[in-house]
Length: 327
DNA sequence: AACGCCATCAACCGCAGAAGG
DNA sequence: GCCTTCTGCGGTTGATGGCGT
Image (cartoon, rainbow, N blue to C red; front, side, top):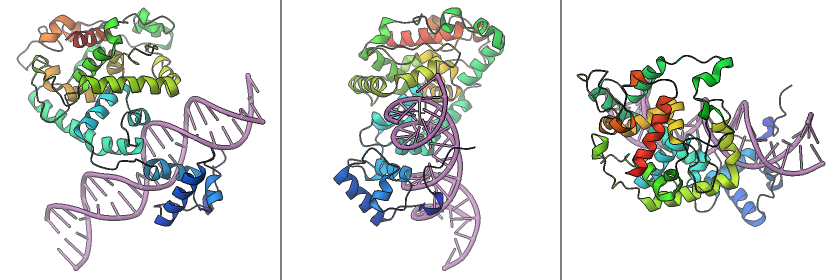
């Protein structure tokens, strides 16, 4: 037996809202509030709408101070940066952009930003033989596939242990300015004007400055703490691949390296963001000479990708974060 | 002018988690 | 601790308008 429907589907109106419906809903909520019960709301007002539909209409359209259309470059950067760091959690991203709704951001991402990034990735693929994702796939191809009984063989012991404090915890990652720096390096290079060919040439004067990220980070932390640290825990810590997270109010919520490594979708975005700078090698470079990042790779990724053993690459990604923060 | 294609965005749907009994 | 109800979230769909042929 399935779940009972939230309303009588036969007697509710669907589709676009009329101005009259909008006016009724708006007037009622402004006068009485939602009463803490969206399901009962349409009946009170006399609207033939599902409660969920009323809620959505209010949150996405009728609510005061809603901004529509025209995302600024800074907003784009924030969206991209947060998408890279926390994935498609639109409500959290929306919390960082006053006046924007999760629905708006989601649509904007799906219809524009994603294409913009993928377009760039294609461009970059014309300039280099393979992308980061392919490199990592290749590297991970050498890994021994885990069985359910030997999961902890696949992942290095310290990382697999969720109960343990995160072994790669680095004080550098725990202050706002450093987090800001890191995010700028990860996500602040998304504007079209920034086409730095490699990491050494990265232009840090992106449109997103440290204070923006400090604010962002503080807001993120407050929203994580207020509403959804369990969400973070379940999302990243309990999926069985060893995703310890920093829990304190001054720490970054998720270890960048872990996320990048474990989520191909984010990897793809990150790869687009980093562009050719991420893969500073050419067709002529032998695999033995190859490191992930050229100059940076020499210190962060000392080995050719093929030579990385299980867990080593993940640690390198953490080192990468440290490297970026230290710059 | 008519048609088809595509991009955009509002709205819907189903699920997971929280809250309350 | 279990069950039910409600809320919030993220993925998806469908209506609409713009543009090219």
